[in-house]
Length: 302
Image (tube, rainbow, N blue to C red; front, side):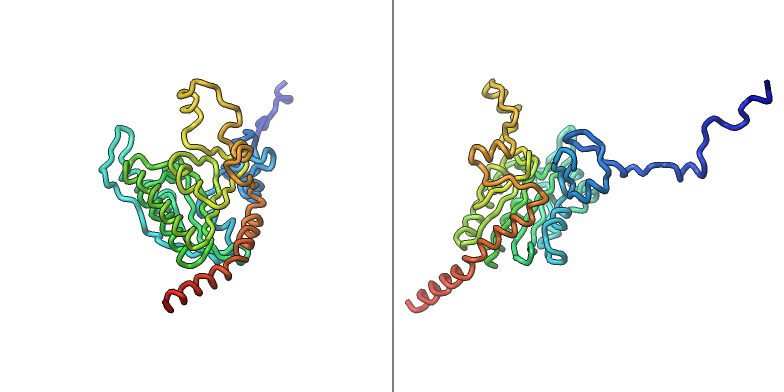
């Protein structure tokens, strides 16, 4: 009987063990359909699931690379960063330490970046919030960057595009965070007086004071498919009114149906749609400059 016994292991692997390991980032689990998608296919599709069309979040830097023409991005106020004016400390976190940890991990000074660039050759000013940095919450620096972007666009005669994803005003800065809503609204009023458009793109999620202020104070409001947009969350609303809300409540499609936004644009079509919008506004740019010049000449003559 011994002659018939297996003399080699039943299972074996050729080569070194390290050579047989599968990379951790080979597959991506979709947050929408929960299916596994090859990471390369997911990234090549701009982080949109090819199976269920779920639009995953992109970082601010990824949005710059995705939307703008190559080598056209010029960032301003890169080193502008939040402080801890209230010395905010809670049992769960220390605000100053949390800011430092996020800056090191994300290589961002705060939850927003702004600068100028081009989309298919058309210039614009761009301000983007990044949800990974404290939920894209609006503190003093985020409000200041949005306001500076609006003022720069007005001064240079450029359209302003804001890409907005946020949980609202940053509670760690209290009243200083809430004041940003009014400050940004004033800057956008100056942009309107300069006859330049504000285009707002709403991403998943966009809530609180950001939705209640500059994200909704725009000439054109776009949103990505199935983005959740509102002021208070649906759970809070249900507890307040003691009624069950519709299943699609506060989604981009629901808001479009009720006239709250202008269009729902898939990510793959976004660059072309924005270029078209910019071209339509650019037609009025020269007459507006001529009108401003004639008014200035008349004022000097008077």
